[in-house]
Amino acid sequence: MTSSPVQSGIDAEAVTSHLWGRLGGLHILSLDMIVHECHDFFRTCVELDDAAERLSQVVPPNKILDRNDPVFILQPIERAIKLLEVLGIEDGGFEVIVRTVHDQVKSLFGGPWFGIFDVRAEELARDYKRIREGLFAEIKKHTFVSLPAEGVKYFDQEKLFGEDVYQKFPSARYDIKEAGNAFAFELNTACVFHLMRASEYGLRALADDRQVQLTTKGGNPFPLDFGTWEDVLRELGRKLDDVTAWERPLGKIRTQAIEFYTNAIEEARAIKEWRNPTMHTRADYTSGSADQIRTHVERFLVGLSSRISEKEKTPLIWTEAQLR
Image (spheres, helix red, strand yellow):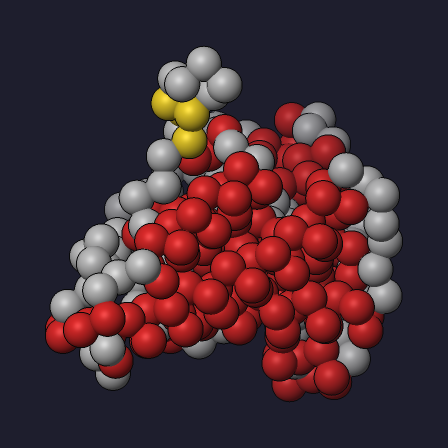
């Protein structure tokens, strides 16, 4: 006879620690989703409990079940399997237990494993009760958070700053999304932290576009990633002087270039005033200030995306192709 893993002394609460592991991170459910999923959860638990109660009344208690027994014993464990899928549980001890019990019960009614297991009424009753208890034990460990209506539009937004920024600055996607999540829950300092990270990808792209090269005092070059914002902005200022010095015949091309780089550098300088206090733990932020900074960073990245990206840059001296 093949014994059930639940009967082998495994602590139900310990093995259910994987139950929510596949969800990971923060998840928001709408009211419709909550009602639907809670209904499925409690229905599964009620049916497991009801089946366990009916199995405990079987005489004799150690009766080996077979295909002539009521099919009611199959439905609860099948619901439990579906619940695992809804919750995204695809590995871990708890899933193994539920699937093993499911295979044992299914073997009573046919299929490739028909007749392999000896499934006894009293043992299956204990299995069902422990699976039910495991589900409840695990769900009680979690706290469910209500998101204010005004925060919904910022939560879990892959393209919070629009399609162009999303496509042209893929390295910033994570931080832009996390900034929105933090702002949605009024985690304002965390929001600003992620905004500063997102804006740095834009600054690097801008420096790369103008072919900025940083050097040590001894004249040795080093990567942009290791330069301070002040280092990069100082060199960008010099590059703007170069643009201003383009020949007058360039006319409208020169005018548009000056406008683009001046606006970008001014936005970056404004962001720098928040960056250092944020990264060096010298400032905390209110929702109002976080919103103001979010607006600046969005404008900075949207402005950059109109002409450049992490992989695209303009020629050192613009041509008519850059005219808008």
